[in-house]
Each structure stands twice: as structure tokens, then as C-alpha cells.
Image (cartoon, rainbow, N blue to C red; front, side, top):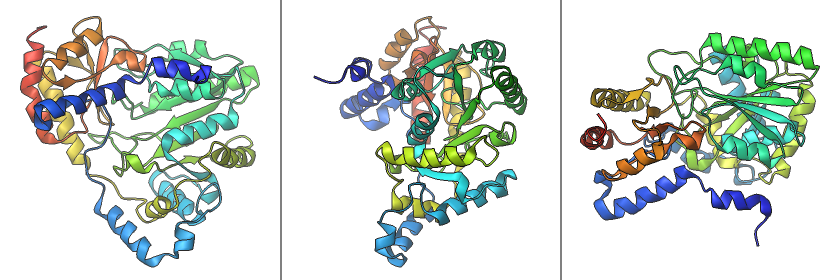
Length: 394
């Protein structure tokens, strides 16, 4: 018999993963070129060439005892210093190795910081729509997830409601920009207002409230849009980052946390987070890929590839009559369902081998998410199928 805590997970397995498995089934029947699977945010763009070269060079040059051995729980100091220097160059910050903890991707990083700061019964506020695993991560430490309802006009955070959802039990707020599932980038004005509200509530309640910035899509921003770096707006900010998207390395599970010196009791938080990294079972991030990141810290995938997909799919769907806020970042479209029950719309899409994720998987029913991190040919081939689907509704 499994643990009681796991029973809801088994009963409500991820709709995204279920769609992915359905895609594999359909590809076996119809062929990959005839299945339009927009379910999983699994990058189709190859990793930059320097990543492969770094792996080969490290295997030849590095002492294998060091390359494949244990290190400080926070990660190799030289890699952490390289990341800090890169952030300082790009965002005019003042980080150093002692602000960086290497993690097993962004998901592990979020679990590390939540274990570090969260007591049972304390609250973590999120803005709907949101990556539903946030709720799982919070419940891992017996915290309580508090949702702010979506602003479906712009999908910028609903700040009036946000202020009412904060309480003396609020321990943290999670923001994600560029955003999954909408592709929206939170404006600097939005970030400033979030920071102002948090500062006011910290004073009112006499409690430290953490702002956790979940940033796996930071480098994926289009049309010259700037993504604010949140530590510059609010001192009690922790940044979680992943190279899954920026370097197309989702399976390598490599990322980091930034715990700035400005954060209240920063040294203690950093020490506790390093220990959390160990006691959660990761111990430390994988050594080889840490060293690869140290050599490829400023490398990026071809953003034009995603941008072409974004424009082609967005323009095609709008032409067919669908409604969608034009994404400024990440690689998702969040399309309004033409019927109230978006799961019914997803089922209709399957008739044309189109796989979409229902918005209820992100606490925002009435919409569907399309992950356009697929081949450009798949985007083009999908348009006639979307046109047929649109004719059922418009």
C-alpha cells in the first residue's frame, strides 16, 4: 500500500504527461509527421555546439577524480563564480560564488528553498494560471498554497486581489516570468507594484516574506522585450533558474538558486539551503554538467527558431478565428477555448491529431496551452488541421 500523501498524485496524474503519452501512441499509428503534439515543453532546438565541445574537452582535460567526484553541497566554487560574474555583466548586480547554489534543475531548486523557509501551515501565494507542480512542492513541506485568480485580459498578475490574499501566515510568493503557460512577460511596473505591496505587508505583519522568482524561460523573450531582474526591486528575493530551455538541456537537470547578500539573514538562509540540497537526496548537482555550465555560461540556443514558430502559429490561429494574448516570451500560446469546457475542445482536437493541454491543468479553465517548441515543419503541417478544427466552431 502506498503512502496516503501519494494517493492523490496517482489519481490525478499530470494531464501534460498523459497528453505526451497519447502523442507517442498516435505517432505509432499515423507517423510523427501527421501528429501535432503541443503538450510538453520539451525543447526541439539543439543545444549550442559549445555544449558538446565542452563535454568532450572536460573529459580530456579534467582530473576524473575531480570531474566525477563529490564537492561542496552548493556546487563547484569556480562554476558558481562564473555564473555570478555572468549575472553581474548582464544585470548590473553584485553577486559572488557565495550567492549561488547549484541545483538539480529549477524544480529541485524550488524544493530546496521551500524546505529552507517553509514551516507547516505557512502560505505560499501564486498567480493563476501557474505551473501546477507548485502546489505539490508547497505540500511537500506541509505548506498551504494560496491562489490569486487570473486577469484574463492581459494575464499580468491581479494585484488588487494579490494584496488581499497576503496574511500574517504568508511566507513566500512565487512569480514566473516569462510565464508558463501564457508566454506573458511581467512588466517592470508590475514587478515594482508587487515589491511595494510586499514591503508594506512585511512592515504590517512584522514577518519576512520571500519573493521566489522561477526563471527557466528568462532568455526566451522576443521583440526586444526586457525581463526585469527581480533582486533589484525587492531585497528578500530568491531566484531559481534552469538551463533546460536556454541551453536545451532538460534531461540534464541543472540549474541554480541565487540568494543575494541583501536578503535578510542571507548567510543563514544560504547555509540552510545548502543543507536542504543534501538532505532532500540530491546531495549536489551533477558534477560533469556543472563544469559544462561553467564553460558555457553565456551560451544560448537559437532564439530565432522559437520566434519563427511563435509568429507562424500565432498568426495562423488568429486568422482561423481563435483568440490568444500574443506571447512575449517562453514558448507557449495560451488560447481561449471556443467552448466553456476546454477539455471538450481538447478532445475535438484529437480528431485531427492535435494535442493540447487543458487550462485547468494550470488553474485556469477555459483555455488551452500549446507548446510551440516543436519543429517548424510540424507547425506548418498543423495549420490545415487547426483550420479544420476552427470550422467546427466559427
